[in-house]
Length: 239
Ligand code: PXP
Image (cartoon, rainbow, N blue to C red; front, top):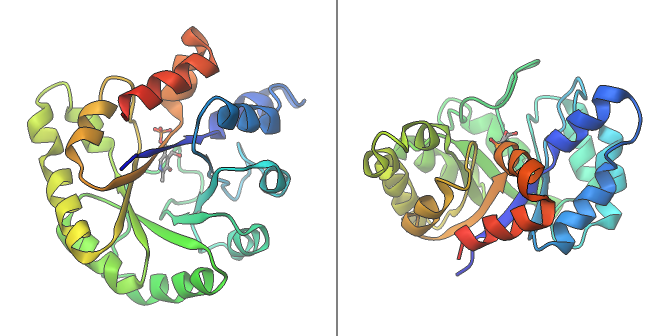
């Protein structure tokens, strides 16, 4: 089984937006990521449009040939409409708040079961695969099943944070969470702070890992190695 690499291109939009023009060209970068071997493109539009704009999503959709993954918080009606209009391969639901620097926690799938179930059925009825962002917590994985989601995305910040201290210990909750997800028939994605140092160990130990979405480290590495080489380096870690 291969683990797909979905490149999160938010950072490209951040650089572009910092000068008000169209450099770097987000659409070209996305198509180049695919050309260089990425098996997916991820975008995370936020209501303030400080990086990916809603317009970017509309423009990207017809150009992409790999898996298009849109992440975001469905509490914004605008987000729901954007996803339904653009019909990505997958929508990943993330409980981030307004103005949050980046995602920093998964869903409480038990407290928000009813809400998540309702919105997930809207997306599933539109033929869109659904994934919910969760911490490596068995109860939250079991809760995710109850929402009807197709997949979970494991929030890997704590793995990345403690990797260099003790990688066996850092990955243990993720191995347990993945085991439970596999037993329940939930697909497994992962993301946040994955990088060239910690990716291979994660992918090797997480059974059934279908997709990783990586942005910050990959774009930073591309400054040194170039985008094409960097994507190859990440793909090599997933083999
Ligand atoms: N998954 C989710 C839900 C995210 O919000 C992000 C960051 O936008 C990522 C994955 C990618 O994280 P990173 O940029 O640290 O690779």
